[in-house]
Length: 340
Ligand code: AQP
Image 1 (tube, rainbow, N blue to C red):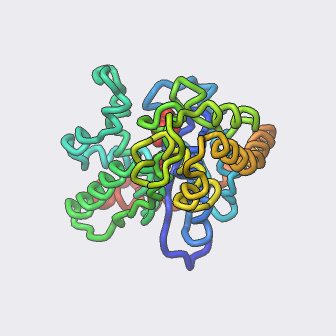
Image 2 (cartoon, helix red, strand yellow):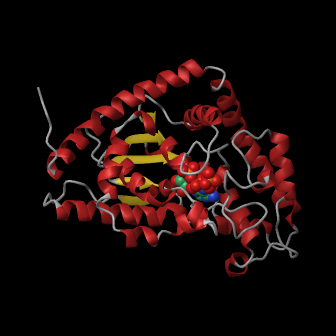
């Protein structure tokens, strides 16, 4: 790895289903652009995925599919470390230490637990409740300075910062852990469901029409965009009016995210028109950009041996860094190491 790069980036995606364009725009696309400037660690967070029920066979396949999606989207395993979280035991070891650093009150404030546990809180796994501690361990075990995430993870990243500060203070080891910064793109950090602009696009949404999967073929993309909710008006001309139409605003964000055209320019182009031209142009852009990625994911999934080789190489590189941190942490907290 290039030693000149000073800052380290860590981010991850759960292998909890087919990835969608929200994961792509909110996370993976940013990962790709960071590879030249940072030491990058991109993991497939399988330990996080089992905080809710997973089918073991499907989990293994999904893990490979996230690896394939990373590579097909442009993550270069020669530049970045790509691995699955459970293969580096230091993540779980540091998470335990953080379970003892984090205060219950901090975790009680996490809105994602409330959203995911829903009304049946008593029946949620305790893993789902302490999930943010594991996320902090994922980041800090590599002493990552920057974390590209969607807006939904902002609160967890703030908690990571609190944990790093408290650990450094409690154990009198100033600057041992860096205080990581989030990297969040304002407009594409929260891509919403195609059916409901109030819900985030999610792998676990029961409706396939709520999202565009990275595995969708062109005809499915066209059909989903055609069916996507808009509004009973024409395209407004002012951004303030658009912000009130959450589904229209979401489609504009997707269009801008994939085309690189500023939202204001898109509004000027389509203002006063009904949404059919806009939707047809949006489908064209999505098909053009997604087609090579989808084809590459499917091709890579035919060569599982190659994907496993990449993960193994990543695991070795990640272990080297993570093991050093965990050894230092064990020393700092006062664990006796029985060395021969
Ligand atoms: N809708 C979204 N818009 C923008 N970014 C998003 N991310 C997820 N959904 C959106 C970002 O993708 C990264 C990986 O997310 P994850 O798979 O670890 O978990 P998640 O946020 O819980 O994603 P899902 O799709 O909603 O999965 P399920 O349904 O399994 O819970 C993160 O950086 C996230 O911010």
